[in-house]
Image (cartoon, rainbow, N blue to C red; front, side, top):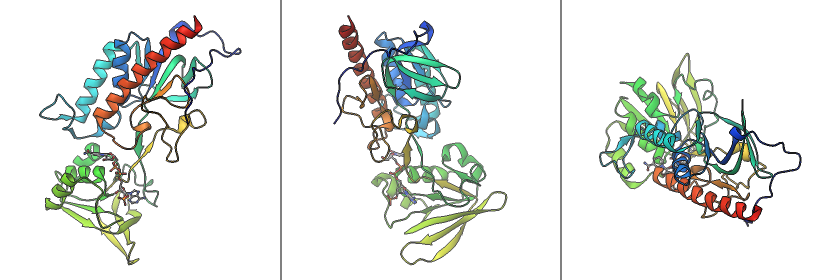
Length: 329
Ligand code: NAP
């Protein structure tokens, strides 16, 4: 059960913070949740810092087309939507740094957030570090990553013009990205460990109707094969135990996501899958620290929902800061 008391103020041993490194709010993560939070923080007149990593937009930057974000009736490329989010955030946030956080200390307020070169302090923090593609963990995957193995069809699909590719997984990402790959590849073979897809009906229907898509059911990839680059995969049928080699020039792995929470182990309560535990108001186990987007919820993974959660987190952070200021007065 989360306890939402105010976090104790400054520790005795903590030095006075340099004014330019002190913020009302530090937002960690530059995907839709973090960028929306930055916009809302500016509108709430909070002195906010956004530490956004190196890819503005997070996962959407690697998404071919976003067709379900309101305001874009024709759809918009993920990369362009990400740039638009970022340029709007730049208008509002006190500082936006495309920098990685290396360490946090949430034991007392103001909270400490470190990058390789800087130490910042924030009276409140929003964690919006998203989620990352899970790897298969089979021989050849690491070795051929970037030489035929990829987790981003939008980035790498173009290199597979008239080539054969394999897609591993049966969820929305596998099928969506597999369909995208049919624009380039001569054949897209989906290898899935069960005999039905988890992907939504509309994607399933499009995939089954696409003459370039073929399916290898009940099968797992045991090894990615190659010489200089990928030449295929060794697959095993989980029902019969039979193994076979499927020739391909590229392997795209879409077997789910893992949350970006390594930094927060021991600092915030995480659930069994490693996601940050947060309530409906985005409050984490540490008062004054909020979570938004895929880092705390694997259930929706939609840009509009992440952006909404970022906005909610700022509204809650603003309330928390006002209450804390009242308690200190
Ligand atoms: P996901 O829904 O978790 O699907 C992962 C897929 O990988 C499942 O088919 C799973 O098999 C398979 N898998 C997991 N571990 C595996 C392993 N070790 N070996 C082989 N296969 C393995 O992940 P996702 O497709 O990345 O989607 C994540 C979320 O984003 C979902 O909520 C999805 O709806 C959303 N999303 C939406 C869209 C869209 O709206 N167009 C696009 C992309 C993603 P099982 O089915 O057997 O579990």
